Amino acid sequence: MSHSIRTLVLLLLWSAPSSGAETPSEYQVKAAFLYKFARFVEWPTASFADPTSPLIICILGEDPFGPMLDQAVAGKLVQGRPLQILRLARLDQPPPCHILYLSYSSGPELARALALLGNHRVLTVGDTEGFTRAGGMIRLLVNKQNIFFEINAEAAQRAGLSISSQLLKLARARTGGR
Image 1 (cartoon, rainbow, N blue to C red):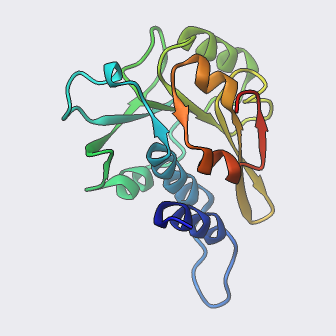
Image 2 (image 1 turned 135 degrees about the vertical axis):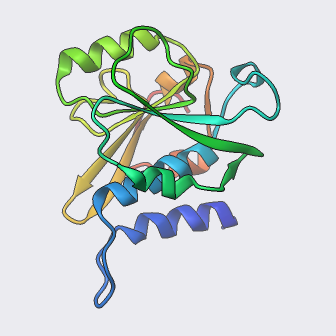
């Protein structure tokens, strides 16, 4: 098992409670997932202005992470690129993001955002019911004390993104594609 997969498996297990240790919050674990997802997705070179451009993670709508996401990515690189966090109140045009976490809870706003993104090279992540069926790429699910994810590989392929087969194997459910 490669170091990256071992790290991701440990991250998945991290969400299980352990006796005597402080259990991380749901959004601390989700912040770590966003960072880990970036490590297992490849964007076309044209997705970046130049080789040193940052990989941008955006939060659309209400920010459930607060400073946790900033802390999870502080000083880290993905594919040799620094990470940058952007918070967006609304989406009127495709954002300058590589990963977009949609915190919308209502269907019409979610559907509008996913339609606006179309096939832009943005990895969409959310946690609302039906997220991947609506065209989102990765849905985070909470079951008791554990966090899992499902992947819509077809949506990622349409957007020109390549999701590692290692990540696809770890998904609880996978639709379309590979």
